[in-house]
Length: 391
Image (cartoon, rainbow, N blue to C red; front, side, top):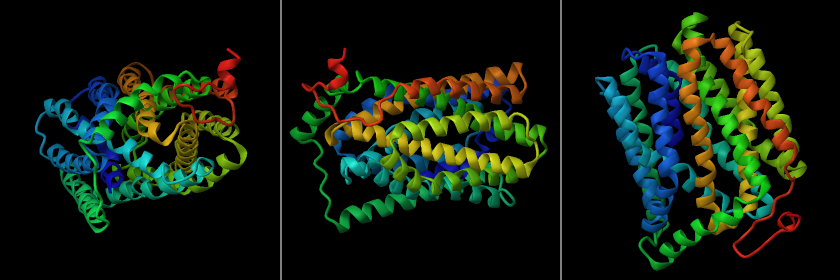
Protein backbone atom coordinates (compact mmCIF):
# COMPACT_ATOMS: atom_id res chain seq x y z
CA UNK A 1 0.00 0.00 0.00
CA UNK A 2 2.91 2.34 0.73
CA UNK A 3 4.55 1.69 -2.65
CA UNK A 4 1.17 1.84 -4.38
CA UNK A 5 0.62 5.39 -3.16
CA UNK A 6 4.07 6.53 -4.27
CA UNK A 7 3.94 4.97 -7.73
CA UNK A 8 0.40 6.09 -8.51
CA UNK A 9 1.68 9.68 -8.63
CA UNK A 10 5.34 9.11 -9.53
CA UNK A 11 4.78 8.97 -13.34
CA UNK A 12 3.26 12.46 -13.39
CA UNK A 13 5.15 14.15 -10.54
CA UNK A 14 7.50 16.08 -12.83
CA UNK A 15 4.61 17.18 -15.07
CA UNK A 16 2.58 18.21 -12.02
CA UNK A 17 5.44 20.37 -10.73
CA UNK A 18 5.91 21.99 -14.15
CA UNK A 19 2.20 22.90 -14.12
CA UNK A 20 3.02 25.37 -11.33
CA UNK A 21 5.01 27.37 -13.88
CA UNK A 22 8.49 26.46 -12.65
CA UNK A 23 11.46 26.02 -14.98
CA UNK A 24 13.25 22.73 -15.66
CA UNK A 25 16.15 23.95 -13.52
CA UNK A 26 13.83 24.72 -10.60
CA UNK A 27 12.20 21.32 -11.05
CA UNK A 28 15.58 19.70 -10.37
CA UNK A 29 16.05 21.80 -7.23
CA UNK A 30 12.58 20.92 -5.91
CA UNK A 31 13.20 17.22 -6.42
CA UNK A 32 16.59 17.53 -4.71
CA UNK A 33 15.10 18.92 -1.49
CA UNK A 34 13.75 15.61 -0.20
CA UNK A 35 16.92 13.79 -1.26
CA UNK A 36 19.04 16.17 0.80
CA UNK A 37 16.72 15.68 3.76
CA UNK A 38 17.03 11.90 3.37
CA UNK A 39 20.82 12.12 3.46
CA UNK A 40 20.70 14.16 6.66
CA UNK A 41 17.84 12.49 8.51
CA UNK A 42 17.54 8.83 7.46
CA UNK A 43 19.93 7.50 10.11
CA UNK A 44 18.62 9.80 12.89
CA UNK A 45 15.07 8.70 12.07
CA UNK A 46 16.16 5.06 12.26
CA UNK A 47 17.70 5.64 15.68
CA UNK A 48 14.49 7.34 16.82
CA UNK A 49 12.50 4.35 15.52
CA UNK A 50 14.66 1.96 17.55
CA UNK A 51 14.02 4.05 20.63
CA UNK A 52 10.26 4.59 20.34
CA UNK A 53 9.52 1.26 18.68
CA UNK A 54 9.83 0.30 15.02
CA UNK A 55 6.19 -0.74 14.68
CA UNK A 56 5.04 2.63 15.98
CA UNK A 57 7.34 4.37 13.47
CA UNK A 58 5.87 2.33 10.62
CA UNK A 59 2.39 3.48 11.61
CA UNK A 60 3.59 7.08 11.67
CA UNK A 61 5.05 6.61 8.18
CA UNK A 62 1.72 5.41 6.76
CA UNK A 63 -0.12 8.33 8.36
CA UNK A 64 2.37 10.94 7.15
CA UNK A 65 2.37 9.61 3.58
CA UNK A 66 -1.41 9.65 3.42
CA UNK A 67 -1.74 13.22 4.70
CA UNK A 68 1.15 14.50 2.57
CA UNK A 69 -0.53 13.23 -0.61
CA UNK A 70 -3.61 15.23 0.38
CA UNK A 71 -1.42 18.29 0.91
CA UNK A 72 0.10 17.91 -2.55
CA UNK A 73 -3.42 17.84 -3.98
CA UNK A 74 -4.28 21.18 -2.39
CA UNK A 75 -0.94 22.91 -3.01
CA UNK A 76 -1.55 26.31 -4.61
CA UNK A 77 1.94 27.72 -5.13
CA UNK A 78 5.48 26.46 -5.82
CA UNK A 79 6.52 27.26 -2.25
CA UNK A 80 4.45 24.27 -1.07
CA UNK A 81 6.56 22.00 -3.24
CA UNK A 82 9.62 23.09 -1.26
CA UNK A 83 7.93 22.77 2.15
CA UNK A 84 6.07 19.46 1.84
CA UNK A 85 9.25 17.29 1.72
CA UNK A 86 10.09 18.52 5.25
CA UNK A 87 6.91 16.80 6.42
CA UNK A 88 7.01 13.77 4.12
CA UNK A 89 10.55 12.93 5.27
CA UNK A 90 9.04 11.36 8.41
CA UNK A 91 7.62 8.66 6.13
CA UNK A 92 10.16 8.28 3.34
CA UNK A 93 13.07 8.58 5.75
CA UNK A 94 12.03 5.62 7.87
CA UNK A 95 9.72 3.17 6.10
CA UNK A 96 12.06 1.35 3.72
CA UNK A 97 14.82 0.33 6.11
CA UNK A 98 12.42 -0.70 8.88
CA UNK A 99 10.31 -2.92 6.61
CA UNK A 100 13.29 -4.39 4.73
CA UNK A 101 15.24 -5.24 7.88
CA UNK A 102 12.18 -6.92 9.40
CA UNK A 103 11.76 -9.12 6.32
CA UNK A 104 15.47 -9.95 6.12
CA UNK A 105 15.70 -10.97 9.77
CA UNK A 106 13.10 -13.68 9.18
CA UNK A 107 15.50 -15.66 6.95
CA UNK A 108 18.92 -17.33 7.49
CA UNK A 109 22.06 -15.77 6.03
CA UNK A 110 22.28 -18.35 3.25
CA UNK A 111 18.75 -17.56 2.01
CA UNK A 112 18.90 -13.77 1.97
CA UNK A 113 18.54 -13.54 -1.80
CA UNK A 114 15.48 -15.80 -1.82
CA UNK A 115 13.88 -14.09 1.19
CA UNK A 116 14.41 -10.54 -0.01
CA UNK A 117 13.38 -11.51 -3.53
CA UNK A 118 10.03 -12.77 -2.25
CA UNK A 119 9.56 -9.74 0.01
CA UNK A 120 10.39 -7.27 -2.75
CA UNK A 121 8.16 -9.15 -5.19
CA UNK A 122 5.20 -8.45 -2.93
CA UNK A 123 6.05 -4.86 -2.04
CA UNK A 124 6.93 -3.93 -5.62
CA UNK A 125 3.48 -4.89 -6.84
CA UNK A 126 2.72 -1.25 -6.08
CA UNK A 127 5.41 -0.22 -8.58
CA UNK A 128 3.51 -2.16 -11.25
CA UNK A 129 -0.10 -1.41 -10.26
CA UNK A 130 0.46 2.27 -9.38
CA UNK A 131 1.26 3.43 -12.93
CA UNK A 132 -1.67 1.37 -14.30
CA UNK A 133 -4.01 3.13 -11.87
CA UNK A 134 -2.39 6.44 -12.82
CA UNK A 135 -2.89 5.78 -16.53
CA UNK A 136 -6.53 4.74 -16.10
CA UNK A 137 -7.51 7.60 -13.81
CA UNK A 138 -5.83 10.32 -15.88
CA UNK A 139 -8.55 9.78 -18.47
CA UNK A 140 -11.07 11.13 -15.94
CA UNK A 141 -9.11 13.02 -13.29
CA UNK A 142 -6.72 15.94 -13.08
CA UNK A 143 -3.38 15.68 -11.30
CA UNK A 144 -4.59 17.03 -7.89
CA UNK A 145 -7.48 14.56 -7.84
CA UNK A 146 -5.02 11.73 -8.54
CA UNK A 147 -3.08 12.68 -5.41
CA UNK A 148 -6.29 12.50 -3.40
CA UNK A 149 -7.00 8.99 -4.68
CA UNK A 150 -3.43 7.90 -3.85
CA UNK A 151 -3.89 9.07 -0.25
CA UNK A 152 -6.37 6.25 0.36
CA UNK A 153 -3.75 3.52 -0.12
CA UNK A 154 -1.49 4.31 2.88
CA UNK A 155 -4.65 4.82 4.95
CA UNK A 156 -5.67 1.24 4.17
CA UNK A 157 -2.08 0.14 4.87
CA UNK A 158 -2.21 1.77 8.29
CA UNK A 159 -5.47 0.01 9.15
CA UNK A 160 -4.07 -3.35 8.02
CA UNK A 161 -0.89 -2.84 10.03
CA UNK A 162 -2.83 -1.97 13.17
CA UNK A 163 -5.07 -4.99 12.65
CA UNK A 164 -2.02 -7.23 12.19
CA UNK A 165 -0.34 -6.08 15.38
CA UNK A 166 -3.53 -6.23 17.46
CA UNK A 167 -4.50 -9.72 16.24
CA UNK A 168 -1.08 -11.05 17.17
CA UNK A 169 -0.91 -9.06 20.40
CA UNK A 170 2.24 -7.40 19.15
CA UNK A 171 4.17 -5.64 21.87
CA UNK A 172 6.47 -2.83 20.89
CA UNK A 173 9.22 -2.49 23.47
CA UNK A 174 9.70 1.22 22.83
CA UNK A 175 11.42 3.27 25.43
CA UNK A 176 13.13 0.28 27.02
CA UNK A 177 16.78 0.34 28.04
CA UNK A 178 17.36 -2.54 25.62
CA UNK A 179 16.16 -0.43 22.70
CA UNK A 180 18.33 2.52 23.76
CA UNK A 181 21.38 0.26 23.94
CA UNK A 182 20.50 -1.31 20.59
CA UNK A 183 20.37 2.09 18.92
CA UNK A 184 23.73 3.10 20.38
CA UNK A 185 25.46 -0.20 19.63
CA UNK A 186 24.17 -0.39 16.06
CA UNK A 187 25.64 3.03 15.25
CA UNK A 188 28.98 2.04 16.79
CA UNK A 189 29.01 -1.15 14.71
CA UNK A 190 28.97 0.82 11.46
CA UNK A 191 32.71 1.44 11.67
CA UNK A 192 33.94 -2.11 11.03
CA UNK A 193 31.12 -2.83 8.57
CA UNK A 194 31.88 0.03 6.24
CA UNK A 195 35.63 -0.46 6.30
CA UNK A 196 35.07 -3.50 4.09
CA UNK A 197 36.19 -3.00 0.51
CA UNK A 198 33.12 -4.76 -0.82
CA UNK A 199 30.68 -2.56 1.06
CA UNK A 200 32.51 0.57 -0.10
CA UNK A 201 32.17 -0.67 -3.68
CA UNK A 202 28.49 -1.42 -3.08
CA UNK A 203 27.96 2.13 -1.82
CA UNK A 204 29.76 3.51 -4.89
CA UNK A 205 27.70 1.62 -7.46
CA UNK A 206 24.46 2.49 -5.64
CA UNK A 207 25.36 6.17 -5.88
CA UNK A 208 26.17 5.93 -9.59
CA UNK A 209 23.01 3.98 -10.41
CA UNK A 210 20.85 6.28 -8.32
CA UNK A 211 22.20 9.38 -10.13
CA UNK A 212 21.34 7.94 -13.53
CA UNK A 213 17.99 6.59 -12.34
CA UNK A 214 16.88 10.01 -11.08
CA UNK A 215 17.83 11.60 -14.38
CA UNK A 216 15.79 8.97 -16.19
CA UNK A 217 12.67 9.10 -13.99
CA UNK A 218 12.67 12.91 -14.03
CA UNK A 219 13.34 13.62 -17.70
CA UNK A 220 11.97 10.62 -19.57
CA UNK A 221 8.33 11.47 -18.91
CA UNK A 222 8.89 15.07 -20.09
CA UNK A 223 10.81 13.84 -23.15
CA UNK A 224 8.18 11.24 -24.03
CA UNK A 225 5.28 13.68 -23.70
CA UNK A 226 6.68 16.99 -24.95
CA UNK A 227 9.09 15.81 -27.68
CA UNK A 228 7.81 12.41 -28.77
CA UNK A 229 4.16 13.48 -28.59
CA UNK A 230 2.83 10.69 -26.35
CA UNK A 231 0.01 11.29 -23.88
CA UNK A 232 0.68 11.28 -20.11
CA UNK A 233 -1.60 8.25 -19.87
CA UNK A 234 0.51 6.30 -22.39
CA UNK A 235 3.74 7.21 -20.60
CA UNK A 236 2.23 6.09 -17.29
CA UNK A 237 1.58 2.71 -18.92
CA UNK A 238 5.27 2.52 -19.83
CA UNK A 239 6.08 2.93 -16.16
CA UNK A 240 3.66 0.13 -15.34
CA UNK A 241 5.72 -2.13 -17.64
CA UNK A 242 8.82 -1.06 -15.72
CA UNK A 243 7.09 -1.93 -12.47
CA UNK A 244 5.89 -5.29 -13.82
CA UNK A 245 9.31 -6.51 -14.93
CA UNK A 246 10.89 -5.07 -11.79
CA UNK A 247 8.44 -7.10 -9.70
CA UNK A 248 8.53 -10.36 -11.66
CA UNK A 249 12.34 -10.55 -11.70
CA UNK A 250 12.72 -10.25 -7.93
CA UNK A 251 12.38 -13.94 -6.95
CA UNK A 252 14.46 -15.44 -9.79
CA UNK A 253 17.10 -12.72 -9.30
CA UNK A 254 17.32 -13.51 -5.59
CA UNK A 255 17.69 -17.21 -6.28
CA UNK A 256 20.33 -16.51 -8.95
CA UNK A 257 22.38 -14.35 -6.60
CA UNK A 258 22.26 -17.10 -3.95
CA UNK A 259 23.34 -19.75 -6.45
CA UNK A 260 25.88 -17.96 -8.67
CA UNK A 261 27.06 -15.22 -6.34
CA UNK A 262 26.33 -11.50 -6.17
CA UNK A 263 29.29 -10.35 -8.28
CA UNK A 264 28.50 -12.01 -11.65
CA UNK A 265 24.83 -11.04 -11.34
CA UNK A 266 25.76 -7.40 -10.73
CA UNK A 267 28.25 -7.36 -13.63
CA UNK A 268 25.63 -8.69 -16.04
CA UNK A 269 22.98 -6.31 -14.74
CA UNK A 270 25.03 -3.12 -14.97
CA UNK A 271 26.24 -4.10 -18.44
CA UNK A 272 22.62 -4.38 -19.55
CA UNK A 273 21.79 -1.01 -17.94
CA UNK A 274 24.54 0.71 -19.95
CA UNK A 275 23.28 -0.82 -23.21
CA UNK A 276 19.70 0.15 -22.35
CA UNK A 277 20.53 3.83 -21.83
CA UNK A 278 22.40 3.96 -25.14
CA UNK A 279 19.41 2.45 -26.93
CA UNK A 280 17.03 4.84 -25.14
CA UNK A 281 18.88 7.80 -26.66
CA UNK A 282 18.15 6.66 -30.22
CA UNK A 283 14.82 4.78 -30.18
CA UNK A 284 11.61 6.80 -30.48
CA UNK A 285 8.94 4.24 -31.38
CA UNK A 286 6.52 3.71 -28.49
CA UNK A 287 6.49 -0.08 -28.86
CA UNK A 288 10.28 -0.29 -28.89
CA UNK A 289 10.44 2.06 -25.90
CA UNK A 290 8.08 -0.28 -24.05
CA UNK A 291 10.56 -3.13 -24.58
CA UNK A 292 13.46 -0.98 -23.37
CA UNK A 293 11.53 0.14 -20.30
CA UNK A 294 10.73 -3.51 -19.54
CA UNK A 295 14.41 -4.42 -19.71
CA UNK A 296 15.24 -1.43 -17.55
CA UNK A 297 12.74 -2.60 -14.93
CA UNK A 298 14.23 -6.11 -14.90
CA UNK A 299 17.71 -4.64 -14.42
CA UNK A 300 16.43 -2.40 -11.63
CA UNK A 301 14.85 -5.32 -9.79
CA UNK A 302 17.85 -7.62 -10.23
CA UNK A 303 20.26 -4.95 -9.01
CA UNK A 304 18.12 -4.10 -5.99
CA UNK A 305 17.61 -7.62 -4.64
CA UNK A 306 21.26 -8.55 -5.29
CA UNK A 307 22.63 -5.47 -3.54
CA UNK A 308 20.37 -5.88 -0.51
CA UNK A 309 21.12 -9.61 -0.33
CA UNK A 310 24.80 -8.78 -0.37
CA UNK A 311 24.48 -6.22 2.43
CA UNK A 312 22.19 -8.43 4.52
CA UNK A 313 24.72 -11.26 4.28
CA UNK A 314 27.46 -8.91 5.46
CA UNK A 315 25.95 -7.79 8.77
CA UNK A 316 24.36 -9.29 11.86
CA UNK A 317 20.60 -9.01 12.50
CA UNK A 318 21.24 -6.36 15.19
CA UNK A 319 23.16 -4.20 12.73
CA UNK A 320 20.79 -4.64 9.81
CA UNK A 321 18.36 -1.74 10.21
CA UNK A 322 21.06 0.89 10.73
CA UNK A 323 23.22 -0.66 7.99
CA UNK A 324 20.35 -0.46 5.50
CA UNK A 325 19.76 3.16 6.55
CA UNK A 326 23.42 3.98 5.99
CA UNK A 327 23.51 2.28 2.61
CA UNK A 328 20.30 4.05 1.59
CA UNK A 329 22.04 7.38 2.29
CA UNK A 330 24.27 6.66 -0.69
CA UNK A 331 21.17 6.18 -2.85
CA UNK A 332 19.89 9.49 -1.49
CA UNK A 333 23.21 11.15 -2.36
CA UNK A 334 22.96 9.92 -5.93
CA UNK A 335 19.33 11.02 -6.12
CA UNK A 336 20.25 14.51 -4.93
CA UNK A 337 23.00 14.86 -7.52
CA UNK A 338 20.77 13.34 -10.20
CA UNK A 339 17.94 15.77 -9.42
CA UNK A 340 20.20 18.78 -9.76
CA UNK A 341 21.85 17.39 -12.89
CA UNK A 342 18.43 16.79 -14.43
CA UNK A 343 17.61 20.48 -14.26
CA UNK A 344 21.03 21.60 -15.45
CA UNK A 345 21.47 19.09 -18.29
CA UNK A 346 17.93 19.53 -19.64
CA UNK A 347 18.60 23.26 -19.85
CA UNK A 348 21.82 22.96 -21.89
CA UNK A 349 21.82 19.65 -23.84
CA UNK A 350 19.32 17.42 -25.63
CA UNK A 351 17.40 14.79 -23.68
CA UNK A 352 19.10 12.05 -25.71
CA UNK A 353 22.49 13.31 -24.53
CA UNK A 354 21.41 13.08 -20.92
CA UNK A 355 20.48 9.42 -21.43
CA UNK A 356 23.95 8.72 -22.90
CA UNK A 357 25.53 10.41 -19.88
CA UNK A 358 23.37 8.24 -17.62
CA UNK A 359 24.76 5.18 -19.37
CA UNK A 360 28.30 6.46 -18.83
CA UNK A 361 27.64 6.71 -15.09
CA UNK A 362 26.74 3.03 -14.95
CA UNK A 363 29.71 2.09 -17.14
CA UNK A 364 31.96 3.46 -14.38
CA UNK A 365 30.41 0.93 -11.96
CA UNK A 366 31.65 -2.12 -13.90
CA UNK A 367 35.36 -1.99 -12.88
CA UNK A 368 34.29 -1.34 -9.28
CA UNK A 369 32.08 -4.46 -9.28
CA UNK A 370 34.92 -6.50 -10.82
CA UNK A 371 37.14 -6.02 -7.73
CA UNK A 372 34.42 -7.15 -5.29
CA UNK A 373 34.64 -10.42 -3.41
CA UNK A 374 31.80 -12.77 -4.29
CA UNK A 375 30.83 -14.10 -0.85
CA UNK A 376 30.68 -11.64 2.08
CA UNK A 377 30.60 -12.62 5.73
CA UNK A 378 28.95 -10.74 8.60
CA UNK A 379 31.25 -8.58 10.68
CA UNK A 380 30.82 -7.36 14.21
CA UNK A 381 32.91 -4.99 16.34
CA UNK A 382 36.02 -6.73 17.59
CA UNK A 383 36.27 -9.19 14.70
CA UNK A 384 38.56 -9.01 11.70
CA UNK A 385 38.32 -10.99 8.53
CA UNK A 386 40.83 -12.14 5.96
CA UNK A 387 40.41 -8.96 4.00
CA UNK A 388 41.63 -6.91 6.98
CA UNK A 389 44.59 -9.24 7.54
CA UNK A 390 45.73 -8.66 3.97
CA UNK A 391 45.85 -4.96 4.80
